[in-house]
Image 1 (cartoon, rainbow, N blue to C red):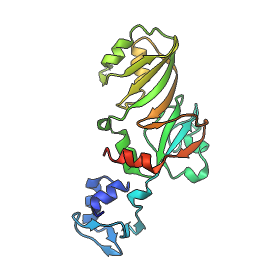
Image 2: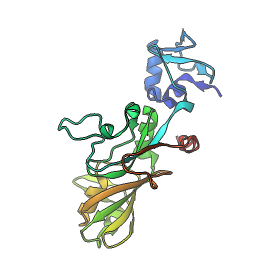
Image 3: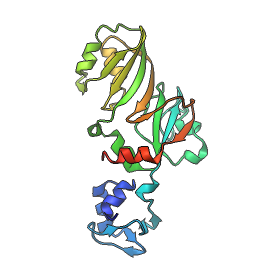
Image 4: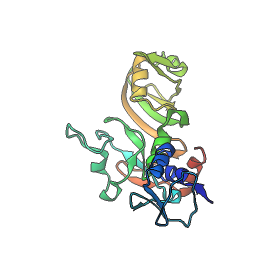
Length: 231
């Protein structure tokens, strides 16, 4: 199936469609060794596309991985305070992967990793409405969880309603679709139930399951294709 070159570059994770169009107009994009000048140019599966002399991977080459992030690791390339990062835990061959959103230093569980910057961006857009589910442990009072279920405003920031199920007297299952920084910790603290431990168990249709801490596995292509259909 043929695609417009800007869409092809976007789906391959090179850049957003708008940025890809600028790359084309700047003369940085080539198809089969020939410079192209119009974003309306079509590209097929058999064509070789390059940007700045580097061949672009086709969308079929997009890879997605599930990583079980350990506690006390930073979701970043390097930390100015010298704290351990996820790349200190991951095997060397995965160092080129990009993380999909962030889990904070103390939060554990499912962290998605990909070779596609565009996919990482789309998965974390609030407009994508992708549910993320966590097990939150709290020693606080759970009587005001209805506030979180309705949505709250804390320090001038609005937080969407959360789906919450009580598992036991200390743990609750929380599902969000927004992905704001520290949103669960902030909202539950506001509700009088501060979080002592936070563990992500799923992201969209991908579940952590029994993946051991610190291990990483490839997500099946079928699952990736299902995700891509939503964008």
